Image (cartoon, rainbow, N blue to C red):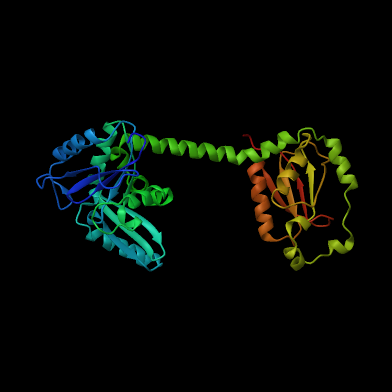
Length: 355
């Protein structure tokens, strides 16, 4: 049991404990009516102590627990209309019909093939259980509605039901009341189990760290790979690159928009004097299917601005995409119109952004 996941199936008057790959409930706790009645906790202290006493005998330290909410403690509504005004009106009606105070209600919204699915419950029920689990040095990973997984009756779960839940982590995350509540309820950090709050912070830190790494890794990698390329080699390349003929220069705007990226003629000039900078940028653009690229050096070797010039007949989508890519790499990007030139796009590199 120690390395197997646990499902706590919370019902209106009881909670059943299931273990991964084991048929039927391992144990069951019935709530006395003087503690819990009609989904309302009448005595919070006794409710928590009753749950804690039950779980202490059933859950080992470092156990991963999922709380599954049965259909009889869920309120549901599907809004088929895609109209936002209608949706807002129906959401308000749904919220007003729930027989709990707003402070006790947790709601998730799921887009399905039938429309916007609203599911609500009394969050006090599962938060008390989550707190008890945490006190045993274990963690509640998710609180999810059973109906999302096709469980519509309040009968015992089968082993296949448990397997269906555990093999669908994306659906679990999408329907997790803990995640939804953390985004919409400002009081959640005070109410939620500490382990979940800590886990949430760690996930966010990792997420932002990955974003920062991904943003700079492609250009830095290429720069390291091509460091040996000198400015003299760039001059040599531009001298042997074939210049477009006058007939090519007269290509119409309609024709340019139909030409693929690898046929657009691009010139990249090193404007900083840093060896290999133009080649690095060419390598990066080639990953985006810009392949007809000539290299050279700018007469001014101390440019701080990166200048990109386009002929008027270059497609707007290509302009936008290229400018966005340059702005991710260089500090200042200046856009100009290219008049008489044998190239469709000319770029003079400037100062790189500081990592």
